[in-house]
Amino acid sequence: MLTALCCGYGKTGLLYFLMVGGCLQACTEHTRQTANLTTTDRSNKKANTQLLGNIKQARLLLKDGDLVTRSDDDFESLTLQNFSQKDRTYSHSGIAFKEDSGFMIYHCMAGFENPNGACRKDPFDSFVNPVKKTGFGIFQYQLSTVEKERLHLVLQQNYQSKKPFDRSFNLKTDDSLYCSEMISKGLQQATNGRIKIPTSFLHNFKPKIMGYQPGRFFKKFEYIGIDDLYLNPFCKEIIRVKY
Image (tube, rainbow, N blue to C red):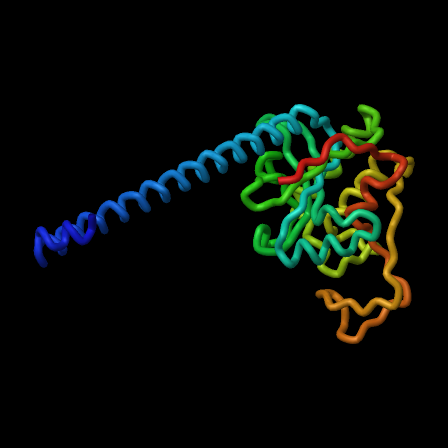
């Protein structure tokens, strides 16, 4: 068939045939790409809808004083996850309280998301934003109404005073706090010592973090890992969501 067409129409006919054939092939390829793109868009839309549904479902489970943890896939987060000795799922944490604009998460952090390092509060949906995070969890402490009110007050004071992030991860000082330290000390203060979060230890530790002189050596370095906050008798798991 191709030979007949070429002979019948000469060079001009052949050129025309190749142009038409090329257009047909291009159109076919474009159609395939469009179909694949449409399928991908539909899959992404379905996935996004499901994620938003998971976040909404989790939000309905939130109560005042709940621990909210989250994970990310950047290097800093992976490093922080490795400090947990039992469950390395999460890299950051905060405490939820419902205020006028909905549930807010009080937390302490540094880095590109919070350059000034001051204690902050963010809406729950922002704190667990799937665009930047890989998942989150909600855990619940056994707190009385009075204890929840005290905890809320402690966190508000940290936020209003712009308590700085503790870059040296030093549990012996209170003038600056890292996320799990803020939560642990807040719980202990709000419950008059009834809840005391267990600590973890690193042995023969040479810290390469701000606040310590180069070459500083610890035979036993004490800290509070993210997993210490919820793997204890005072806390129970409510939900885990993985993106």
